[in-house]
Image 1 (cartoon, helix red, strand yellow):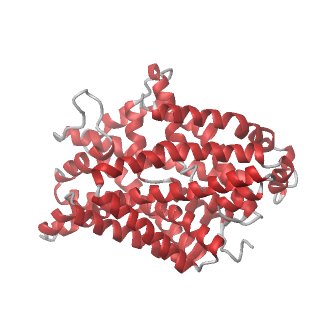
Image 2: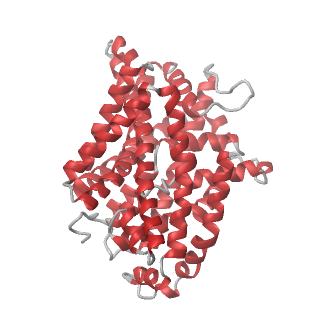
Length: 449
């Protein structure tokens, strides 16, 4: 069954695809500024601990459910259910996950389109095509629609290739490119005046903030959302894994790459901000806090690149290219969620499913663009603040309470006959049943408080 519906050709291909799904725009620009505002290295240490106390167990729930069913979230959650109520609730949870993944992609494609625009703008400006460059970097409905459409077409094009020839092939190309570009940019930025001050902010811990509830809760949220959990992207990727793979060790590798790249981004972003400050660019708001989020990406860093002359254009092109790659590796996993459902539920061809889902999400994204001030923040909140954590709780409930322990153990024993003697079996079932839902509820309560 798995082979007929597509399957990753290698462990490396899966790991890079799953890590690519997890490594997105938030990891690269959000995590470093969170660290800088919450005790520097103290935040990083707490984040690393919580990533494996929370993110890894939930990641494993998705991977195990997906491989067990070799199907989408609706199939996976209904297959492990024994009664009509749990089956109906499982199907509903799977469908909501598909909707939430589509909502995330609808706003993600807009922001990713901006990244594409900035990537192209700097070379155009260097060639004297300033009018075109200005159009690509100026917020306007026609520009936002055009760039969003281009990004969605790129995403659809990869998904059309299928699991091995599309997702895996492009992930094994894009992820090494992302890592090499990040390392090269980080090495260059560290040679500039002011970089060491930013590095010190990032690496020197302020342990007085470790006991702060804000730091712990911020780290909890970052750890959970960094792995794209809750919406079924990891579940559907897990469904394309061979039964011969040892899932606990694969999950560790995916989590390590994800948190490693988030931490690595700090060696680029924080020094870059302080290099900008050394060159007269404002990096603090009126309250003295570090600027972050869209302010950082679209004002602070372009202002820095402008002070670097010709080299600045090259660095800017590489940086926004890096951001575009990160966005694309995440978007393909989001689009695969509804595509897999359409293929498996309605027996559609991949071409038809990818075209339909991509067009539908693109239309939704266009509505958001046209009504940006009213809808953008609403869609972000509905999908990430509400949808993702609640879906995460449901996945933990199904993996920990609904899924029969004997069936779960047999899934682990497919490639590890002694799984019942290992640390994973002794800890994970209890942990995902009791601890993870409580932590996620705490994150949810904080996010809406």
